[in-house]
Figure (cartoon, rainbow, N blue to C red):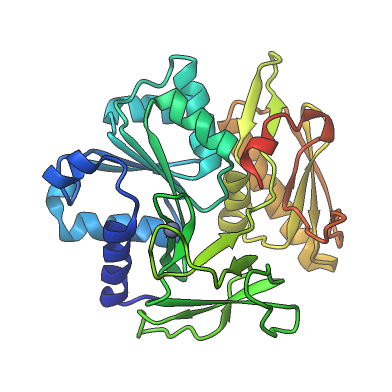
Length: 346
Ligand SMILES: [Zn+2]
Protein backbone atom coordinates (compact mmCIF):
# COMPACT_ATOMS: atom_id res chain seq x y z
CA UNK A 1 0.00 0.00 0.00
CA UNK A 2 1.46 3.35 -1.00
CA UNK A 3 0.18 6.87 -0.39
CA UNK A 4 -0.27 9.65 -2.96
CA UNK A 5 2.85 11.46 -1.81
CA UNK A 6 5.00 8.35 -2.32
CA UNK A 7 3.59 7.86 -5.85
CA UNK A 8 4.24 11.54 -6.63
CA UNK A 9 7.86 11.10 -5.48
CA UNK A 10 8.32 8.03 -7.73
CA UNK A 11 6.90 9.99 -10.69
CA UNK A 12 9.20 12.94 -9.96
CA UNK A 13 12.26 10.68 -9.67
CA UNK A 14 11.35 8.97 -12.96
CA UNK A 15 10.73 12.32 -14.65
CA UNK A 16 13.81 14.13 -13.39
CA UNK A 17 16.49 11.45 -13.10
CA UNK A 18 15.76 9.23 -16.09
CA UNK A 19 18.48 9.82 -18.72
CA UNK A 20 17.47 12.36 -21.35
CA UNK A 21 17.58 10.33 -24.56
CA UNK A 22 16.39 13.19 -26.80
CA UNK A 23 17.59 16.48 -25.26
CA UNK A 24 16.02 18.78 -27.87
CA UNK A 25 12.58 17.13 -27.73
CA UNK A 26 12.62 17.16 -23.92
CA UNK A 27 13.61 20.86 -23.90
CA UNK A 28 10.52 21.68 -25.99
CA UNK A 29 8.28 19.15 -24.22
CA UNK A 30 9.69 18.35 -20.75
CA UNK A 31 6.60 16.48 -19.50
CA UNK A 32 6.28 14.31 -22.64
CA UNK A 33 2.80 15.77 -23.27
CA UNK A 34 3.06 15.34 -27.04
CA UNK A 35 4.21 11.70 -26.83
CA UNK A 36 2.15 8.53 -27.19
CA UNK A 37 3.18 5.98 -24.54
CA UNK A 38 2.64 2.22 -24.69
CA UNK A 39 3.31 0.05 -21.64
CA UNK A 40 3.72 -3.69 -22.29
CA UNK A 41 3.76 -5.82 -19.15
CA UNK A 42 1.53 -7.24 -16.43
CA UNK A 43 -1.67 -5.22 -16.66
CA UNK A 44 -3.66 -6.97 -13.95
CA UNK A 45 -2.90 -7.59 -10.29
CA UNK A 46 -1.16 -5.34 -7.83
CA UNK A 47 1.96 -4.42 -9.82
CA UNK A 48 3.16 -0.90 -9.07
CA UNK A 49 3.94 -0.11 -12.72
CA UNK A 50 0.32 -0.72 -13.81
CA UNK A 51 -1.17 1.08 -10.82
CA UNK A 52 1.10 4.02 -11.49
CA UNK A 53 0.02 4.34 -15.14
CA UNK A 54 -3.67 4.14 -14.17
CA UNK A 55 -3.12 6.82 -11.55
CA UNK A 56 -1.46 9.15 -14.08
CA UNK A 57 -4.41 8.71 -16.47
CA UNK A 58 -6.88 9.44 -13.68
CA UNK A 59 -5.22 12.65 -12.50
CA UNK A 60 -4.41 13.79 -16.07
CA UNK A 61 -7.43 12.75 -18.18
CA UNK A 62 -5.80 14.24 -21.30
CA UNK A 63 -3.27 11.39 -21.05
CA UNK A 64 -5.87 8.64 -21.37
CA UNK A 65 -5.97 8.75 -25.16
CA UNK A 66 -2.18 8.93 -25.51
CA UNK A 67 -1.32 6.14 -23.03
CA UNK A 68 -2.13 2.47 -23.51
CA UNK A 69 -1.35 -0.56 -21.33
CA UNK A 70 -1.03 -3.88 -23.13
CA UNK A 71 -0.69 -7.26 -21.45
CA UNK A 72 2.37 -9.35 -22.24
CA UNK A 73 0.04 -12.35 -21.94
CA UNK A 74 -1.50 -11.48 -25.33
CA UNK A 75 -0.50 -13.72 -28.25
CA UNK A 76 2.30 -11.97 -30.16
CA UNK A 77 0.23 -11.22 -33.29
CA UNK A 78 -2.46 -9.51 -31.16
CA UNK A 79 0.14 -7.50 -29.25
CA UNK A 80 1.78 -6.41 -32.51
CA UNK A 81 -1.60 -5.40 -34.02
CA UNK A 82 -2.52 -3.36 -30.92
CA UNK A 83 0.86 -1.59 -30.93
CA UNK A 84 0.56 -0.82 -34.65
CA UNK A 85 -2.89 0.72 -33.97
CA UNK A 86 -1.69 2.82 -31.02
CA UNK A 87 1.51 3.96 -32.83
CA UNK A 88 3.49 4.79 -29.67
CA UNK A 89 6.44 7.18 -29.68
CA UNK A 90 7.56 5.88 -26.24
CA UNK A 91 7.59 2.21 -25.32
CA UNK A 92 8.00 1.05 -21.70
CA UNK A 93 8.53 -2.68 -21.13
CA UNK A 94 10.81 -5.47 -19.89
CA UNK A 95 14.10 -6.10 -21.74
CA UNK A 96 13.01 -9.63 -22.75
CA UNK A 97 9.71 -8.31 -24.14
CA UNK A 98 11.55 -5.51 -25.99
CA UNK A 99 13.82 -8.14 -27.53
CA UNK A 100 10.84 -10.18 -28.81
CA UNK A 101 9.23 -7.00 -30.18
CA UNK A 102 12.54 -6.12 -31.87
CA UNK A 103 12.29 -9.40 -33.79
CA UNK A 104 8.76 -8.46 -34.89
CA UNK A 105 10.06 -5.06 -36.04
CA UNK A 106 12.94 -6.64 -37.97
CA UNK A 107 10.48 -9.03 -39.65
CA UNK A 108 8.46 -5.97 -40.76
CA UNK A 109 5.32 -6.94 -38.82
CA UNK A 110 5.69 -4.30 -36.08
CA UNK A 111 5.79 -0.77 -37.51
CA UNK A 112 5.70 1.89 -34.78
CA UNK A 113 7.19 5.42 -34.78
CA UNK A 114 8.93 4.77 -31.45
CA UNK A 115 11.69 7.23 -30.46
CA UNK A 116 12.60 6.00 -26.98
CA UNK A 117 12.38 2.60 -25.30
CA UNK A 118 12.34 2.52 -21.49
CA UNK A 119 13.14 -0.87 -20.00
CA UNK A 120 13.30 -2.21 -16.46
CA UNK A 121 12.53 -5.22 -14.28
CA UNK A 122 15.27 -7.43 -15.72
CA UNK A 123 18.91 -6.99 -16.69
CA UNK A 124 19.76 -5.75 -20.17
CA UNK A 125 23.01 -6.94 -21.69
CA UNK A 126 24.93 -4.71 -24.13
CA UNK A 127 24.16 -7.24 -26.91
CA UNK A 128 20.40 -7.17 -26.25
CA UNK A 129 20.43 -3.38 -26.03
CA UNK A 130 22.21 -3.15 -29.40
CA UNK A 131 19.67 -5.48 -31.06
CA UNK A 132 16.69 -3.48 -29.70
CA UNK A 133 18.24 -0.10 -30.58
CA UNK A 134 19.06 -1.16 -34.13
CA UNK A 135 15.66 -2.82 -34.76
CA UNK A 136 13.76 0.33 -33.77
CA UNK A 137 16.44 2.89 -34.67
CA UNK A 138 16.17 4.61 -31.29
CA UNK A 139 17.77 4.84 -27.84
CA UNK A 140 17.10 2.35 -25.07
CA UNK A 141 17.28 3.16 -21.35
CA UNK A 142 17.28 0.87 -18.32
CA UNK A 143 16.01 1.60 -14.85
CA UNK A 144 15.61 -0.48 -11.71
CA UNK A 145 12.56 -0.52 -9.47
CA UNK A 146 10.40 -2.79 -7.35
CA UNK A 147 6.73 -2.84 -6.46
CA UNK A 148 7.86 -1.72 -2.98
CA UNK A 149 9.66 1.32 -4.48
CA UNK A 150 9.02 2.01 -8.12
CA UNK A 151 11.93 4.30 -9.02
CA UNK A 152 14.94 2.84 -7.22
CA UNK A 153 17.68 3.63 -9.73
CA UNK A 154 18.30 4.84 -13.26
CA UNK A 155 21.28 5.02 -15.58
CA UNK A 156 23.55 8.06 -15.95
CA UNK A 157 25.03 9.12 -19.30
CA UNK A 158 27.96 6.74 -18.64
CA UNK A 159 25.54 3.82 -18.41
CA UNK A 160 26.00 3.24 -14.67
CA UNK A 161 23.01 2.72 -12.40
CA UNK A 162 22.58 5.35 -9.68
CA UNK A 163 20.48 4.60 -6.58
CA UNK A 164 18.02 7.32 -5.53
CA UNK A 165 19.55 7.11 -2.05
CA UNK A 166 17.86 10.30 -0.86
CA UNK A 167 14.53 8.41 -0.92
CA UNK A 168 15.45 4.73 -0.71
CA UNK A 169 18.13 2.79 1.16
CA UNK A 170 19.43 -0.52 -0.16
CA UNK A 171 21.60 -2.74 2.05
CA UNK A 172 23.16 -5.83 0.47
CA UNK A 173 23.36 -8.48 3.21
CA UNK A 174 24.37 -12.13 3.67
CA UNK A 175 22.07 -15.09 4.50
CA UNK A 176 21.78 -13.93 8.13
CA UNK A 177 21.03 -10.31 7.16
CA UNK A 178 24.51 -9.07 8.10
CA UNK A 179 25.89 -6.23 5.88
CA UNK A 180 28.43 -7.22 3.18
CA UNK A 181 31.41 -4.93 2.28
CA UNK A 182 30.90 -2.11 -0.26
CA UNK A 183 31.10 -3.33 -3.87
CA UNK A 184 30.18 -6.94 -2.97
CA UNK A 185 26.97 -8.63 -4.08
CA UNK A 186 24.92 -9.82 -1.12
CA UNK A 187 22.78 -12.93 -0.74
CA UNK A 188 19.75 -10.64 -0.69
CA UNK A 189 18.98 -6.93 -0.22
CA UNK A 190 17.09 -4.96 2.43
CA UNK A 191 15.04 -1.96 1.30
CA UNK A 192 14.06 1.02 3.45
CA UNK A 193 11.47 3.26 1.78
CA UNK A 194 11.71 6.89 2.96
CA UNK A 195 8.81 8.11 0.79
CA UNK A 196 5.90 5.89 1.83
CA UNK A 197 4.22 6.76 5.12
CA UNK A 198 1.06 4.69 4.88
CA UNK A 199 2.86 1.33 5.01
CA UNK A 200 6.42 1.96 6.18
CA UNK A 201 9.03 -0.52 4.95
CA UNK A 202 12.18 -0.65 7.02
CA UNK A 203 14.92 -3.14 6.08
CA UNK A 204 12.44 -5.21 4.06
CA UNK A 205 13.95 -8.21 2.22
CA UNK A 206 13.24 -7.67 -1.52
CA UNK A 207 15.08 -10.81 -2.66
CA UNK A 208 17.25 -9.10 -5.31
CA UNK A 209 21.03 -9.46 -5.37
CA UNK A 210 22.65 -6.03 -5.49
CA UNK A 211 26.06 -4.45 -4.89
CA UNK A 212 26.48 -0.83 -3.75
CA UNK A 213 29.78 0.85 -4.66
CA UNK A 214 31.47 3.45 -2.46
CA UNK A 215 33.49 4.80 -5.44
CA UNK A 216 32.24 8.01 -7.06
CA UNK A 217 31.09 7.88 -10.69
CA UNK A 218 32.92 9.95 -13.31
CA UNK A 219 29.59 11.52 -14.34
CA UNK A 220 29.72 13.69 -11.20
CA UNK A 221 26.52 12.40 -9.58
CA UNK A 222 26.63 12.16 -5.81
CA UNK A 223 24.23 9.21 -5.81
CA UNK A 224 25.88 5.80 -5.24
CA UNK A 225 26.42 3.39 -8.15
CA UNK A 226 24.72 0.02 -7.80
CA UNK A 227 24.82 -3.17 -9.84
CA UNK A 228 21.84 -5.48 -9.90
CA UNK A 229 22.20 -9.17 -10.63
CA UNK A 230 19.63 -9.99 -13.28
CA UNK A 231 16.88 -12.53 -13.18
CA UNK A 232 17.99 -15.92 -14.38
CA UNK A 233 14.79 -17.26 -15.95
CA UNK A 234 14.84 -18.51 -19.55
CA UNK A 235 12.79 -17.56 -22.56
CA UNK A 236 10.96 -20.73 -23.73
CA UNK A 237 10.68 -21.58 -27.42
CA UNK A 238 8.06 -24.22 -28.19
CA UNK A 239 6.75 -25.52 -31.50
CA UNK A 240 3.12 -25.23 -32.58
CA UNK A 241 1.34 -28.06 -34.43
CA UNK A 242 2.84 -26.86 -37.76
CA UNK A 243 6.38 -26.80 -36.42
CA UNK A 244 6.53 -22.99 -36.17
CA UNK A 245 8.43 -21.67 -33.19
CA UNK A 246 6.48 -19.67 -30.56
CA UNK A 247 8.41 -17.72 -27.89
CA UNK A 248 7.04 -17.44 -24.35
CA UNK A 249 8.34 -14.77 -21.97
CA UNK A 250 9.41 -16.13 -18.57
CA UNK A 251 7.69 -13.18 -16.85
CA UNK A 252 4.42 -14.00 -18.63
CA UNK A 253 4.62 -17.65 -17.49
CA UNK A 254 5.39 -16.76 -13.86
CA UNK A 255 2.55 -14.19 -13.90
CA UNK A 256 0.08 -16.86 -15.10
CA UNK A 257 1.19 -19.24 -12.34
CA UNK A 258 1.16 -16.61 -9.59
CA UNK A 259 -1.91 -14.55 -10.54
CA UNK A 260 -4.19 -17.12 -12.17
CA UNK A 261 -3.23 -20.22 -10.18
CA UNK A 262 -1.99 -18.67 -6.91
CA UNK A 263 1.14 -20.85 -6.98
CA UNK A 264 4.41 -19.16 -6.01
CA UNK A 265 7.00 -21.85 -5.25
CA UNK A 266 7.49 -23.76 -8.50
CA UNK A 267 9.87 -24.58 -11.32
CA UNK A 268 8.62 -24.87 -14.89
CA UNK A 269 10.89 -27.04 -17.06
CA UNK A 270 10.81 -27.47 -20.82
CA UNK A 271 11.19 -31.11 -21.86
CA UNK A 272 11.31 -31.15 -25.65
CA UNK A 273 9.69 -29.05 -28.37
CA UNK A 274 6.10 -29.59 -27.25
CA UNK A 275 6.32 -30.60 -23.60
CA UNK A 276 6.49 -28.78 -20.27
CA UNK A 277 6.95 -30.19 -16.76
CA UNK A 278 5.95 -28.34 -13.60
CA UNK A 279 7.53 -28.96 -10.19
CA UNK A 280 5.44 -27.57 -7.31
CA UNK A 281 7.13 -27.40 -3.91
CA UNK A 282 3.96 -27.83 -1.81
CA UNK A 283 3.25 -31.40 -0.62
CA UNK A 284 0.19 -33.58 0.05
CA UNK A 285 -3.33 -32.51 -0.88
CA UNK A 286 -2.31 -28.79 -0.84
CA UNK A 287 0.36 -29.62 -3.41
CA UNK A 288 -2.05 -31.71 -5.54
CA UNK A 289 -4.55 -28.82 -5.59
CA UNK A 290 -1.84 -26.29 -6.46
CA UNK A 291 -0.51 -28.50 -9.26
CA UNK A 292 -4.00 -28.97 -10.72
CA UNK A 293 -4.73 -25.20 -10.66
CA UNK A 294 -1.32 -24.46 -12.19
CA UNK A 295 -1.73 -27.02 -15.00
CA UNK A 296 -5.22 -25.68 -15.82
CA UNK A 297 -3.97 -22.07 -15.95
CA UNK A 298 -0.94 -23.02 -18.05
CA UNK A 299 -3.00 -25.03 -20.57
CA UNK A 300 -5.40 -22.09 -20.97
CA UNK A 301 -2.45 -19.73 -21.54
CA UNK A 302 -0.81 -22.11 -24.04
CA UNK A 303 -4.07 -22.44 -26.02
CA UNK A 304 -4.27 -18.62 -26.26
CA UNK A 305 -0.69 -18.56 -27.60
CA UNK A 306 -1.54 -21.04 -30.38
CA UNK A 307 0.03 -24.00 -28.54
CA UNK A 308 -3.01 -26.19 -27.68
CA UNK A 309 -1.22 -29.54 -28.06
CA UNK A 310 1.71 -28.84 -25.75
CA UNK A 311 1.65 -31.24 -22.80
CA UNK A 312 1.98 -30.02 -19.20
CA UNK A 313 3.09 -32.80 -16.85
CA UNK A 314 4.05 -32.22 -13.27
CA UNK A 315 4.71 -33.36 -9.73
CA UNK A 316 4.15 -31.83 -6.31
CA UNK A 317 6.55 -32.06 -3.36
CA UNK A 318 9.41 -31.36 -5.79
CA UNK A 319 11.40 -28.09 -5.84
CA UNK A 320 13.10 -28.86 -9.16
CA UNK A 321 16.74 -28.34 -10.10
CA UNK A 322 19.21 -25.97 -8.45
CA UNK A 323 22.11 -24.56 -10.47
CA UNK A 324 25.71 -24.96 -9.33
CA UNK A 325 25.71 -21.27 -8.32
CA UNK A 326 22.93 -22.03 -5.82
CA UNK A 327 20.35 -20.13 -7.87
CA UNK A 328 17.09 -21.88 -8.59
CA UNK A 329 15.46 -20.78 -11.82
CA UNK A 330 11.69 -20.67 -11.98
CA UNK A 331 11.53 -21.12 -15.77
CA UNK A 332 14.08 -23.46 -17.30
CA UNK A 333 14.47 -23.96 -21.07
CA UNK A 334 15.41 -27.24 -22.73
CA UNK A 335 19.25 -27.05 -22.74
CA UNK A 336 19.27 -27.82 -26.49
CA UNK A 337 16.95 -24.92 -27.27
CA UNK A 338 18.52 -22.13 -25.20
CA UNK A 339 19.29 -20.01 -28.21
CA UNK A 340 18.88 -16.35 -27.41
CA UNK A 341 18.45 -16.54 -23.67
CA UNK A 342 22.06 -15.56 -23.18
CA UNK A 343 21.16 -12.25 -24.76
CA UNK A 344 18.55 -11.51 -22.11
CA UNK A 345 19.80 -12.84 -18.81
CA UNK A 346 22.98 -11.75 -17.10
ZN1 LIG B 1 27.26 8.13 -13.26
